[in-house]
Image 1 (cartoon, one colour):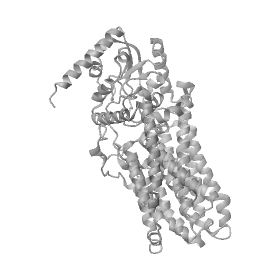
Image 2 (tube, rainbow, N blue to C red):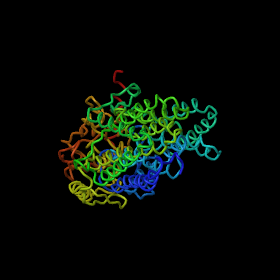
Image 3 (cartoon, helix red, strand yellow):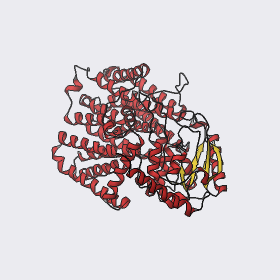
Image 4 (cartoon, rainbow, N blue to C red):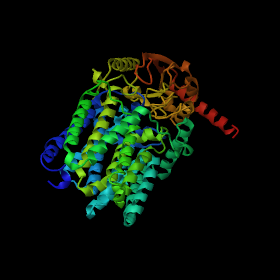
Length: 633
């Protein structure tokens, strides 16, 4: 064993190879397997319903809110999975973890002197931090955020492969950069634009001879985008029109996606407890990696203990000492890397700073910026949104500390970083499993099995299963068939339409107003998202065919906190409540977070002749067009 791959002499190399690294590998496997195991547990009607409706039938909509084309990307995997939600989630989690592992491995092999077996184990442990992207369990279902994350991982993998010797690696690397850039545009155009600038920065500063390959990657992305435009909208003009109309709808909705709001500096919400946790974690890690090699036995035992604690947390979801759920705020995922880097600058009179190479500096800066590149354009606090991709912050630490590899301290440094990544991941993910946002607490307590479209089955709470069973039974008895168009005015239950296999009109989710939990969204100020929800719903339904609206059923939740204005939205397509009869009534499920109360929902069936309803729709649209024409500007 080389000096770089051991702690010292005597029993310590044996401790490393036979205990610590295998224990770390087991910990990574447990963290990953636990999240995969719960892939068929739970369902959030709002956000996951939106994702599923978007993926199941993306070609049904002429507009996208938010302006993302993720539904087209994930549509074919959805078809291949037979519409099985659990399989989709497993694929999403596995792909994210695999890309994070590959990227971490390439960074370690690029900057550190570690053999590939050790690098594989260490990089897998660090990559477990990629699972933090699923701290809101609804993100397990493929969506625009996970696609943007996976795209950025692909771009960085491509850049690192392009830097390896060998023409094959370079060609594959730059193709990946192009494909990743295209995927990024399909997920979030704002993030795609920012990532293109970041790639240009990386190339200009580090490898100017890469200008031609970078142009090739851009051409790959452009070619894929042109093919996409013709496949979706029949040409470039159609796709541009779609994206412009989608952006206008976001402004009308009040989703805070305007360009004027996009470039901002958000407040990092921290409290004294999280500050203390981050500081203690950084101090413990610095002591474990900077202490002299002759005193490595105690830190090694501490690392082994930390791994065991991490496994206990991963399996039980509680602190083994206090038996309470671990609580790690997402801000801590930024503070820990910052404190580590600050502390390391004082080691041996600034050795880490003085010994930086151009590659380590550029990589560290790139990884440091990537979370904000990911968050760009989000209506959420950028620190909160960026923390979903906290793996990039940890990889910035890996790059920043790389001068220690020259001192024969590769594994000495990387193993504690790996263990810390695993501990943070276990804490965040298990808090999500114990307290899933928008669902009943503790997924492990779910026992009721409910059928889903495509022959899939999900394990949910008993109350949620009863709600879905009642809605499905009453809807089918009333004559709601598969594929029936439905206008969802509940503002919060697009997932019910997916379960009923109905076609949501206007948008996959006609979102209502949401009085947000400021702490949940990472904002230090009160936020009322989507104040223009009624106007946006009218605009989106105005793009639907009157023939479909004439025969559409309507889902309402009159007393719900997120409901759309029934009278005004119906009037936009020439309908009113008297044109429908309530054929099914049931109560929305209670959850422990954003909707702690039950609200009655009703499914309304049209009773007017379809021809008369269609004519009324046309007349209403003509009147609206006339009034808008004469409205003062």
